[in-house]
Image 1 (spheres, rainbow, N blue to C red):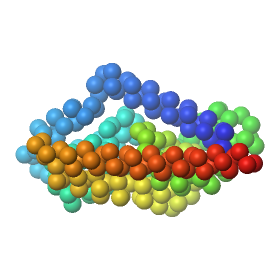
Image 2 (image 1 turned 90 degrees about the vertical axis):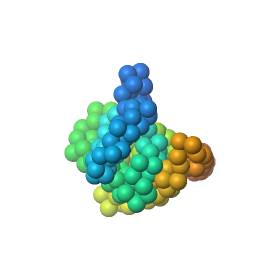
Image 3 (image 1 turned 180 degrees about the vertical axis):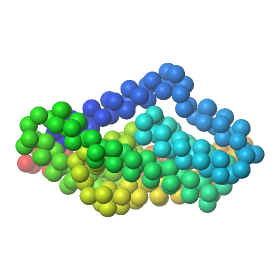
Length: 220
């Protein structure tokens, strides 16, 4: 477990650095994204959907406010189309992260963890707990990308990864897109309450998961 959290921390630092850079430069800020969607509001719906899909895919490389973007897609596209665009974007991002890490991640792991036994132990640990970690990954920004990369790097079976990623993404999108679709500039409360609710539930799940496995580790 120690080696797995070491790798997660390194990946988290990398994505956090990108996040800080994006914040400083204003790259892909919420205001910028909202401005783009507002400008294309009268454009064909397929263009707006393409923007949403592209931004969610880019979240794999440059941090994007995912929850807010999905809510905005609900507001600009309406519920069914927002769900379709958001799920498509998240699935492309997750599968791309898995595939890139599957192809190149093992080299990174060998560089970061020199000891073969420790590296195999880390892989075994992630295979054991990775499904639950992916399910709860949206509790924190950048954690979905971290778990997708770890899934590919440790060669988690793709069907298992896809099942966990889908279970983590689809309900998240259904709730967030719906709240955005019933919100407006004059009544943003559904989106605000949804954001608070989703974050609180996922944080609680992550806290309980971490506490459980901390007790298991303490008991030996």
